Length: 159
Image (cartoon, rainbow, N blue to C red):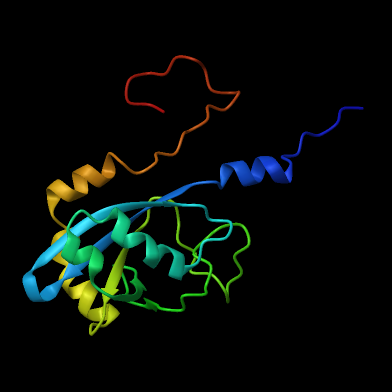
């Protein structure tokens, strides 16, 4: 009888040890923005923890030092402002987690602005073709497995 190999909890934790996300920082009054990468451990990181990582990851001092009251997603502007909420990870439950995914872009909301304000300001930036190209080359790519029935050689244009 063969024993099924199940990943142990420690191997699952290793897979989750580091998430890389992108945070768009905006300063509407000076027409300044910066897209930064933030790496964090999804097992215990909260929205507040990610907010605290902004100053050390921003290269524009005025963007890093401004007060951010939370985040929003570029597609809908829904605000994520509960600083005690888990950001992501296997411990997420629908009610207590922001469900931020690896490689996701989120917008930091500056004090005095709404998520909708930020979405409107961010759209031209995030739709810039050069930025889209750069992000498409830095996001993790999914690896496709070959099925055991697929031959080693494929005709040109086939999968």
